[in-house]
Amino acid sequence: MRVLLVEDDEMIGASLRDALGTQGWSVDWVRDGLLAQSALADGDYACVLLDLGLPKRDGVEVLRRAREGKDATPIVVLTARDGLEDRIGGLDLGADDYLLKPYEFRELLARMRAVIRRRDGSAHSVIGAPGLQLDLTTREVVVEGERSQLSAREFALLHALLERPGAILSREQLENRIYGWGEEVSSNAVDVLIHGMRRKLGPDAIRNVRGLGWRVAPSAAGARAE
Image (tube, rainbow, N blue to C red; front, top):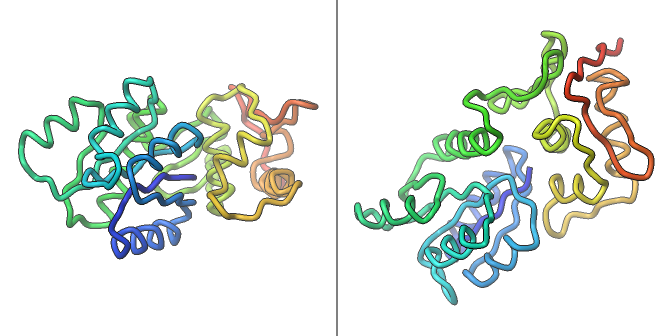
């Protein structure tokens, strides 16, 4: 899945980008508040990791404008501003979580999963329909009770489809959820991913709607392929 990282410190930003990459996240990294605002307007992100002390436009203003513009993307504030009023102010402006630097990377990952679950309307780490579920913690797909590991891009694609079972997502929408800036995307990349996933999920789990895109039926329970 794609995450927007807003961090002006080169060492912190590079370290966090690389660490998230090892966990299968596609990371778009910007270093000032104006670029963050532009990226939010143009991107489709699973969540945003937002520093507050930014050049050109403070992170608090980025947060304020995002929520005033009805952008519901989950935002986790990562900052050294540890005052009570800072924390209350950030949360009241619409931050989904507030994590003080320095933090443990595993805790950050857990908080990211939590805000994404809440956005998806689930209190649990598993989303989907009976017969076809996605475990957000282990990044496994569960088909009729049997678990299979997914690659990072397979996970991102299935997560996008299972957020709204039955909704049709176009090729462009899926590419935006899977690939970050600068990643080369071939014209048939989504087709190749889906072809491979059908071997794990069953041939009817992900259905093509000609000329429009792909969808997972609300009651999807595709038989597992042998």
